[in-house]
Length: 292
Ligand SMILES: NC(=O)c1ccc[n+]([C@@H]2O[C@H](COP(=O)([O-])OP(=O)(O)OC[C@H]3O[C@@H](n4cnc5c(N)ncnc54)[C@H](OP(=O)(O)O)[C@@H]3O)[C@@H](O)[C@H]2O)c1
Image (cartoon, rainbow, N blue to C red; front, side):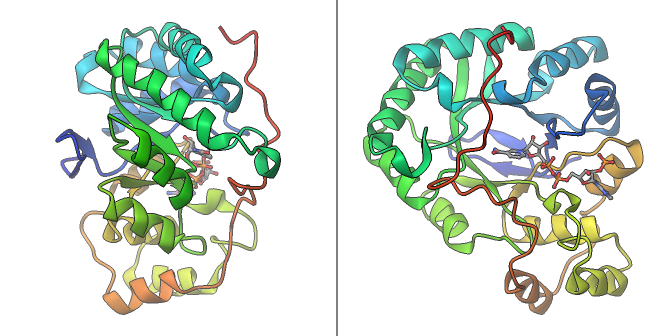
C-alpha cells in the first residue's frame, strides 16, 4: 500500500493499519504473518489484548526489518500513573521483543468511569511519564485512545509533547463527528477502532443504507465502511482473520463515494456502537498480572 497520512511530527503512516485484537480471534500470530504478506505495515496492539507477544514474534519470523513496521501499543487503566507507566512500557517492550515503540498510547481516559474525579491529574501525570519515554528514545511518539474532546483538551493544555493520534470507535452509525473534528482542529489524526462495527448483528452489516451503497458501487459493505472513513481523513485499523478479508480491506483506493453518499452515511441512525462510553463505562477488564 502506497497511501500515507502525515502525522503532526512529520512521520508518514499508512492510511490503513491492522488491528490485532478481537475476543474471538485465535491463531493470532499466523494471521499477523499473513497480514505482513498482504502488505500491512502498521499494527495496533495493547497490553490489555495479550497480542503483543504474537505481534513481536510474527514480525521477527517474517524477516521484515524493524524499521519497516510501525508498532502501536497502549497502557491500560491499571498501568496509569508516573511509575506504573514506566513499568508498563518495559513489559510491552519485552513482550514485543523490541527496543522501541513507534506510537505509545493511554488506552482509556478515566480509571473508574464516572466516579473518577481525579482523572485529569492522573492523565497528565501519566502523560509526563510518557514524554520522558520519548526523550530517552524508547518511544518515538505519543497517542491517545478513547479521549473525547474534554479529555484531549486536558492533555493539550498540559503537555510538552503533543499527541499525534487519537483512536476512537468510528464507523458509519457511530461516526462521532464532534470528536473527530476536534482532533483535526488540533492536529491530531483520528484513528478508527472497530471501523467495520465488528460485524455486529443487525447493525452495520445488516444496515440497509450500507447494503444499498455496496450494491451501487459493486463493493463489499466493509469496503464502503473503510472508504467512508478514509474520505473523512480518518485512519482505520480493521481486524481480519482471513487473507481474503485482509486484501478486501486494502483494496479501497480505486473508487470514491460521492459527497451525497458520505453525507448519508454520516447521518445514518446510531448502529453498531459497542456500548463502552469513556466517561461512564469502563470495560470490565484488567491487565493480566501473568502477562509480563
Ligand atoms: N482502543 C480501543 O479501545 C479499541 C477497542 C476495540 C478495538 N480496537 C482495535 O481496533 C481493531 C479493529 O476493531 P475490531 O476488531 O473490534 O473490529 P472490526 O475491525 O470493526 O471488525 C472485525 C470483524 O470484521 C470481519 N471482517 C474484517 N474484514 C472483513 C471483510 N473484508 N469482509 C467481511 N468481514 C470482515 C472480521 O472477520 P474475520 O476475522 O473472520 O476476518 C471480524 O469479525 C482491533 O483489532 C483493535 O486493534 C481498539
